[in-house]
Image 1 (cartoon, rainbow over the protein chains, first blue to last red):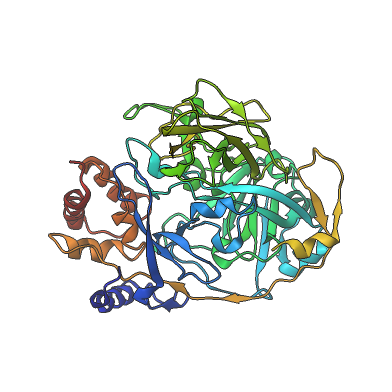
Image 2 (cartoon, each protein chain N blue to C red):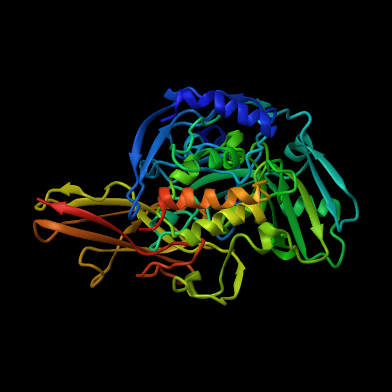
Length: 411
Length: 110
């Protein structure tokens, strides 16, 4: 895939633009992308390399090398409800990502509309505050964007820009209380260590309302699945905003600013906004729509043990297994249909590892006749919200959560 | 992977609480130093390929663009203008037209 002949040109360009020096650049060995996968995106292109070239990461679908966009191969989700750190998806906005982090020098600043500005070391955070753990799904706002029709520009993900981890860290509330939030605070803004290549481009920052930030659930994680975060997943600290899209889960978090005015920065006010309509859905080309910042996640469910096109025995029971999540609350039920939605039956839910996490489900059925069948799955969450029958559409490709289907051939 | 944690966990025992447990184990972090891989992939040769290679690859690798679906010329123009106006890509005015033409030729909606 990479062309050796282009190397000199690439290095020259880099030097001219002054990009070198931003962390060590490993010169590409063309063999680091070993195999390819064909994602079933309507009208393509679906071919992507599977890469093992990223440190601390296993095989990942390469969507973009720099800044990294790495998708979790979907079969990983069949292994269990916790997504392994080395195959947890990766998404960065800017290319200047520190690649050398000294835990003795790193600090987290808490400033702004507070009684006392804090500069917390990692030791302060790990040993000076109560530790908490929480299972939660981290899902890109644009997960499944590649399935939008008409297609929209952006990271052309299939369904693997999501993962579930057991996060360990401290409550954001405890950190804010330590600094002492002054009355009149309205939002809290979060910034990490990533920087744009072009100096005057907008630094990536996201804000939460003050009551949300202090709800006792939002946390600052220093571990996922019992281990420190891989660097590309946000080492050493990452904000965890249970039930909300991953755009708020700021990686390499090193700056917390309490605001007494509503944040107007680009990444909160303009980017990552959705139509203020049911399912954030509009008609292609529709204009003059009120836009609001993306926020709570919505329910989804997936079959993980059978891929479309799979053949099963028509005379014998078929086991169907998958994962579901409620979005901003737990899973109430997962239903499936083998007759295109005329009849729905409940699947069995397995152990609840926490309302914000993945929930495993499974069932068995016997297909009534040989030939092609479609299996639909639908999650209803504990707030009574179910996945819709028809896909949503918006120009950014956000919040897809249509009922999923898998085509099976019985013989 | 997180099994090491479990023996030291004290269950809160309140089912409705999202925090399933408190970790009592001392947890230590280790410094990290890695090299991220880079891509040498260039845009396919053609009219305007030098212009797009020289203007666009400083901030992102080419694969991002090559993985996009076919888009209208208007949509490609909007993407290029977003890079310039919002993300401050230093693209000379005379290069904008050739970049949009190149993208439309490579991945224009037919």
